[in-house]
Length: 282
Image 1 (spheres, rainbow, N blue to C red):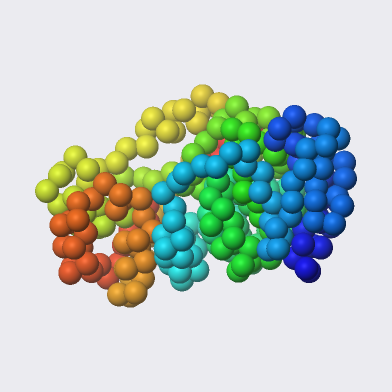
Image 2 (image 1 turned 135 degrees about the vertical axis):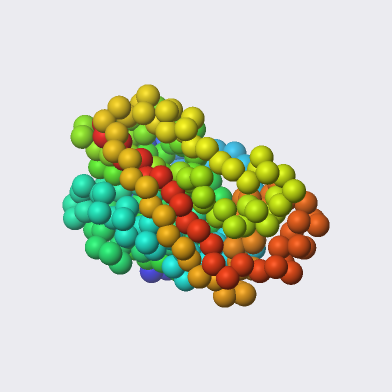
């Protein structure tokens, strides 16, 4: 009940951050665990204190096992050096409104909170399982299930949009951002998880390489006021963390069963994190 009450209180106090995904009008009433817009469209707050804004069911590759593995390795510190650098790039750390797009199981936004990120923080993902996991472990943000294509977020309300290893909708980002607000997007660089790629695709050299040139060019089209930072480091793996890495990365989706079995018998002791941080200003 406390989580429902906390979520209801957040919606009452900060309803200006949201819009109805059906009619795009504002929310004007919170009654118990129900939220309604001025046209009467109704959304219920879950027992975990989350809101489900999807208008239809969706399929995604992120099942509970994958998300649990991602949670394990993320909280063990896989992305901490990256997030340390990303934190320094956030302009409005104390009073700004932050929206984490495709937040997954919530560990990254929570870690940024431990570094000192304040203000109002909302994390959302299209995966209900991911948001349930986030709400179970973290109380540092407001968590909801949502889709950028049918956005429940209000225009010109956000100082920072985080877009970490997740799809983009630049037209939507522009709508959501305040004037002078920023998008911080993280994309893989050429050596990202290179050791694992070589394990999975040891006989397919073309799959051992990666280029983000197209992604960066697309970002620059929409945010010409662009700063680029490269972050590269090595992360040590225990056998358990290697198994988690195997389960959580989309790299495994295209690998053959034989390649996965080979990787399990040749576990990595460390892996490279190599990413590009794109910082665009509206």
